[in-house]
Length: 334
Image (cartoon, rainbow, N blue to C red):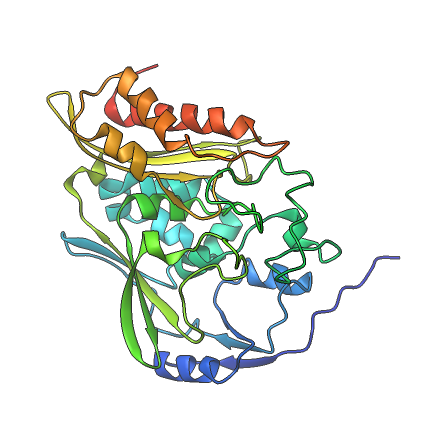
């Protein structure tokens, strides 16, 4: 006989405007916003998350993509599919389109939203299985992955409390493109640099980002860097369809007469948050574009990686993935 899994009871409210949505959620400590919910519903089914209230925000005016020439503004409710195939994204920010299309399946991309993708939680199997201790679910209970099967887990940004990997592809591209997240709460609006939005686990792995309760992601804004057109996303995974990254790299390069003027690099599959590879960027800046400097940049970025029993291979894989992405963008064929 099939086992029937029931969700915990919850209330449902369909918001018609931003202000009402924010006020309603702010008054309920265990409330959550509901958009595409490709992640939240899974977590509710598994009793990992048990919100007492869902505030449906799908009627809010947050579904526009606007490109002014100076910046790209993406509403929080824009679906991953609409964003990936938008003509201006494909033309001016190819790394973002490529990253999104490398993730999930077409059906999920049709439902998943920009804001939801940013807020999605780790796919660590120990986090999803309530039979195992997990500091993200129950602070202080322990991290089962550290001494468990940790092949898919992080080697950067970890702590002795958590080594769960951030799963997003889209976020890797956004962090490389100097994106800014615009949020609004009861006290007003504020802008958060994408690289500052997600938190490393440290001693509080249950605290995953800097959002205050009730704050609503309204949009993501990406500046129109001239060299963003010269960008690419490389993802290495166990299979080519519907699989999370073992290692990935989002790269944009400004190259003039063989010299690297500037670089923007994000990495995924290897860290507890979308990873901005600032060490590698610093190595590359002002240097001649050749294989030697690419290798040096990748080695420098991974120099502080901390592997566990089953994922040491990720260090070498991440280096190769980054070098491969840099070569692709710079036109240095392997």
